[in-house]
Image (cartoon, rainbow, N blue to C red; front, side, top):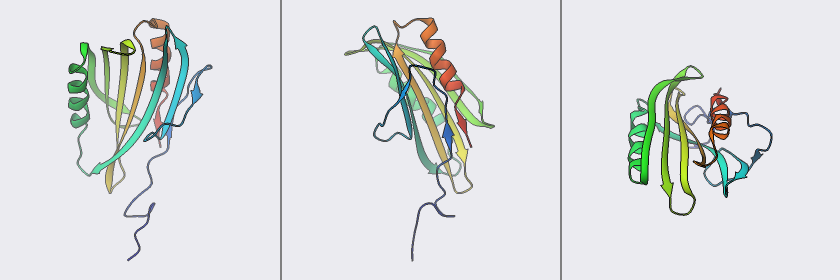
Length: 154
């Protein structure tokens, strides 16, 4: 028996796109399907990374929400600012905003988007996370939010 990817039994991952503004550069990062870095601000380079993980049919995004909230709560000076369910690209999604202190980087703001893509054989969970220094300021956070809002799954 020949087993191959992509195939009917193992569909390709969904097409994922996002739009980053000027000053952002694509980068290769292990385990990521997309990644970009922004300008260094106050000693920290903001970044957006996107991964895609396959799960069995019926997988619920509460798993990712709960794991992300636990991870944030394990950090120093942590705060889950918001955590809500919604839809993106007409698919179930969860959006999480959090802050915490990283020993090396200092105060961090992080924005997570999880999107569930049911391909009929499995559920691909697309996870986009934007990370910035919490010292970067509201204008920079707005730029990160704009990048995440541009995320599309086809």
